[in-house]
Image (tube, rainbow, N blue to C red; front, top):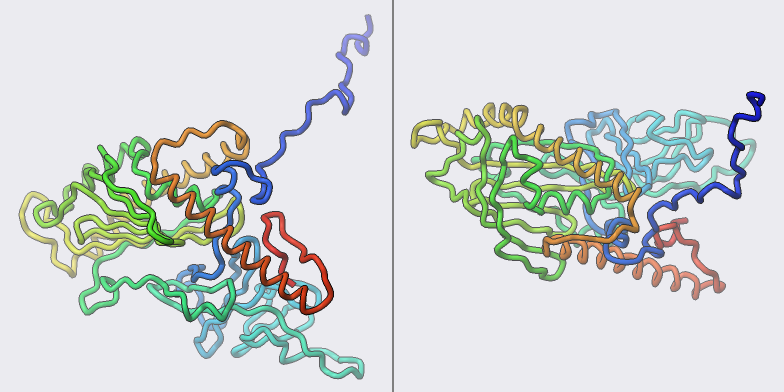
Length: 399
């Protein structure tokens, strides 16, 4: 028998099993898990995109909100501006260009845009034509809590949406803080589930930020989910010794998903906010802000002086907080991979709070889609009757 005869026959394309289909989009999704894992976040809120200190005068950076690229730049006047990240001419990203004064100039043909997205200068011959009136989209932008925030939705709504106030950080005696941010390959809803679902204490068994958690309260009120656990807060061989248990009740924790933001409060003295930026269906940037009113001098009943709390927080962030958050990142990224491979598998979710997070996320996204469709219908009735194109997630495509 020849070598060729010994080889098994090559299967034809028709005999191969079909390639597995990816997770469904929002319109096609069936069941709560598929719906929530395809839902976006309502753009009519403020979302953090970068640290304020990361964008110096004359600098431009790229960010994304749900697949839309946005160029954020600071003019030489110190003012931040945000534009749709494309030149209207050849569609190059404006973030590849340069800041010129208070404007942003495309690096290809030198079209220069002001903060409202209008072209104010053409760096080449116009061939005898009148200067065209050209513009791209712009976004409201502001700063708060050391972060740059943009409003990716209807600009008319921006003034009516508030960024969370954190008086403990803005008062005359600001609390010590720890900042951390990550870009995780995971859907934003997985991160919201993670940060408020204390049944995953096993993941953090080395650092023990919480353990022995029992859900004691869970309710949805409007666009907020409130919950509480009876638990033990602040373990760890080193960091746990600085927890001021004499003055702070560390036997319970209150949390809330104030859509689209998440927060917690332990004894009125240990607090945090979690702000997510949904970059696309599988990528989320997440900003954590932890702040503390009191730390104990280990082995005593004394408080750590306020001036020393800052350096101690930096040390705690490096030794404990950021490592345990990296564990969360690894977990949600693995969950994303698992969902993509097994999105049709039966759902087994025991924590009722997670169901409420997901219900709220689905409802808010559906409300946004309904508003967009209604707006598209009104535009259609004012002109000829046309069907508005939609994105794979069910949202009308922007012009």
